[in-house]
Structure formats: C-alpha cells, structure tokens
Amino acid sequence: MTTTTIAAPRSPRRLRGRTNTELYAWLFMRVSGVFLIVLVFGHLFVNLMVGEGINALDFAFVAGKWADPLWQVWDLLMLWLAMIHGTNGLRTVINDYAERDQVRMWLKMLLYVAAAFTIILGTLVIFTFDPCPAEAAAELLPSFCPGA
Amino acid sequence: MPKAPAGTIYRGREGMWSWVAHRVTGIGIFFFLLVHIVDTALVRVSPESYNEVIATYKTTIVGLMEVLLVAAIVFHAFNGLRIILVDFWSKGPRYQRQMLAGVGILWLVLMVPFLVRHLSHVFGG
Ligand code: HEM
Image (cartoon, rainbow over all chains, first blue to last red; front, side, top):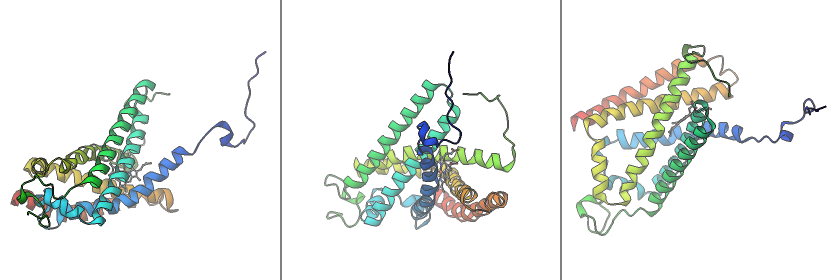
C-alpha cells in the first residue's frame, strides 16, 4: 500500500521551503517607483525643458552636468533603480507569457545578461568619465577645460 | 501550467486597460533605456562620436518619438503611483477609478506645457 504524506494543517509555509523573494521584488517595484518619479522627472525637466532643451544636448552639456557630484549621484541612482525596476518588470512579463520552460529560462537569461551589461557599462562611464579628453577638438569641450 | 483560452478579456473596463497600458509603457521605456545607456556611453569614446549620435535625437522624426516616450513615461509614473495607493492606502481600491481620472488630468497638465516647449525646440530649431 502506498502512503501519501499530507502536511499538517496550518503548518508554516517556511517549512515547505518557501522564501519571500517575490514579496521583496513586489516591494522593490513600489519603493523604486517613488524614487524614479523624482529622478526621471528631474532628468527630463533639466534635459528637455530648461534652456534650449533637446537642441542644447551635446558632449559639453553632459560634461558640464557630471562636473557636479549631485548629477553624478543622480544619474547613477537613476541608472541602477530604473534598470533593476525595468528588469524585474520584464521578468514578470516573461513569466506571464513564455509558457515553455526552456524558452522562459533562456529569455530570462538574455534579459539578465543585457541588464548586467548596461548597468556595468553605465556605471563605468559615470566613474571614469573625462570631461576634457586631451586629443579632442577644443570647441567641443566644456568651457572649464584648459584649452577650451 | 494551465493554458488560458485565446482571446479572453479579463473583465475589461478601466482596470484591465490601465494594466495593459502600464505593461506596454513599461516594456517600451525599458527598451528605450537600454539604447539610451549605450548611446550615452559614447561620451567615453570621444566628443565627436557622442555629438554625432545625439544629433539623431534632434531630428524631426526622433523629436516626435520623444513625445511618445515622454507621454509613456508620464502615464507609467502617475499610474504607478495609483497602483501604489491602491496597494497601501486603505481607501485606494475604492477610489481606483477616480485616481485613474486623476492620472489622466495630471498627464494632461504635464504634457501640454511639455508639448509646447519640446515641439518649439524640434520645429523652431
Ligand atoms: C517613473 C516612475 C515609475 C513608477 C512610479 C513606476 C511604478 C511601477 C509600479 C508600481 C509597477 C507595478 C508592478 C506590479 O504590478 O507589481 C511597475 C511595473 C513596471 N515598470 Fe515601472 N515605474 C516607473 C518607472 C519605470 C521605468 C523607468 C521603467 C523602465 C525601465 C519601468 C518599467 C516597468 C515594467 C516593465 C513594469 C512591469 C509591468 C507589468 O508587470 O505589467 N518603470 N512600475
């Protein structure tokens, strides 16, 4: 005779090997969302509304912004929060629509590789940025560079 | 995994459609962001290559795509706030419809000045 083991009623979920990862992911979407409103709206306002808007954007504009530690921290936070928020959002979307196990697994792998690549790339750019590269034409540089 | 019959509509109405719009805008913003991080990384290559890629952002076609992008972000942001209020505010679920109307109003209040300003940059040079 085969016996089926049935968990005792009301036994705590943890005993069945469950974790709270999904709860933390759910919470992160909401907390990061609140921060992103400030970060993204501030970014759009300064880059598209102030002064000449889109027409003012060039290397010197970016260099001028990143000369200020405030904008370095701003952009770094925005990069990490938006990428993790978006990646977690896309994870949900993939889980919803990709029904075959293999397809779902590979789509998520692709997503995580793309996310890690862009986060690392963006972080390196912010930290290693040189506003006055020696070999560049002086008229393309921000006004605080020696030759400009 | 159980399979839903194709072409079903979950209850319809504003609750479902705001969810669809939130999902579509979130996916769209994500893929723009991937491209945007890579194009910004060109500041690390040379001022010339960055200025070259950013010049495409100033063309009329891309300028109009930026309107779509900002419209998507503003909707996603305010509707995201609505989702948060539905989840955490005790009266949130009861007022979700009114809050969606609020999302629409705030969206208009931000989009009108943005459109005036951005389109004058795109078309005014
Ligand atoms: C600007 C402020 C933002 C706020 C307030 C916000 C808020 C939210 C919230 C509350 C969710 C709900 C997730 C759930 O239902 O559990 C969500 C989902 C999502 N967000 Fe955002 N978000 C913002 C910006 C962004 C950005 C910049 C991106 C792209 C990089 C993004 C991409 C997504 C995606 C892909 C989803 C998943 C949609 C789904 O599951 O249907 N969001 N957002």
